[in-house]
Length: 304
Image 1 (tube, rainbow, N blue to C red):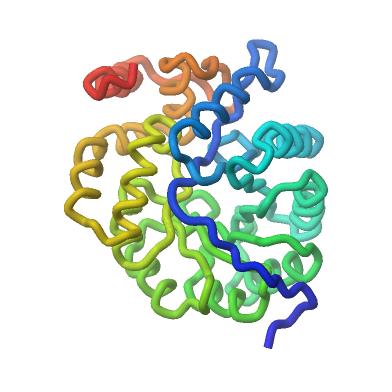
Image 2 (image 1 turned 90 degrees about the horizontal axis):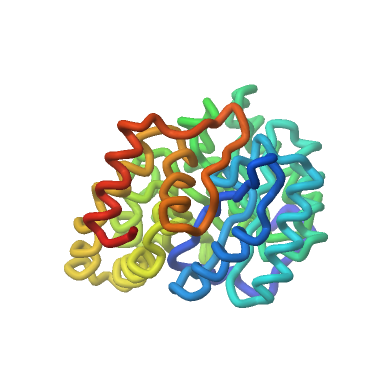
C-alpha cells in the first residue's frame, strides 16, 4: 500500500542516455544561456533521451535558488518536450529540498533528481524519513541519487526499495556508489516500473546488461551519439556491440574524472567550442598537465 496520495497513472518510462549538464558561465560569473542553448541543441541532435539541469555537473552548490528556477524554466521552454528535463533539487536540509523540488515542479520539469543529504550523514532511518517527507510533500516523479563518495553517507539498497514500494512518485535511482553488487540488488528487488540508472559511466554498460535502464552520465556530454548507442545496445542485451563502443571510449571516461567533476567536463566542452571555460569558485581550471592528457585523448577520438 502506497503511503501517500500521489498515484501516478502513467509509468515513468525514461531509459537510455541521460546527460548531467554543465552550467555555462560568462567571464563575469553570470549564466551563459546562449551556450546553454547550444549544449541543449547538441544533445537533441545526438540521441540523448534526457538531461539533468542544475545537478552536481552543473556546479549546483554555487547556484542560487533563483538561478536554479531560471535554469529549469529556460530548459523546459527551450526543449519543449523534445527531451525529458530533470531538475536537480537535492539538499541536506529536508525543508530546503522540499522548496527546491516545489520550484522545479512549478518550472514544469518532468522529474527531479534528489541527492542523499550530504555532510550531516543521516542514518538509514533518517535517510528514509527525509525522502518520505519530500515525496509526500510534492507530487512530482523523484529519482533518488546515491553518491556516497560525495555525500559521506549512502542510500542503501534496502532503503531505496522500501521508498520505491511506499511512494509511487519515487520512480528511480541514480546509483553512483561504484558497487555493482548494489546495482544488482536494486534490480533484483525493485518493484515493477522502478528505474535503476547507473551514475558511473564506466559501469553503465554492465548495469544495463544486469537489467538497468541507462545512465545519468557525465561522459554523454562529450560523445553523446556514441554514448546513447552504447546505452541502447546494452539495454537490449547486445553486449558484443556495446563493448566495442565501451572500449573505444573507456580511457576518456576515466580522464573526465582525473580532477573533480565537473572541472574536466567543462574543459572538454570548451575545447569543443560549446561552452566557455569559466567556473565558479571553489572550482577552478584544470592543471595544465591533466588538461593535456584530456585534450590529447579527445584529439585521438576526433572529438576536437
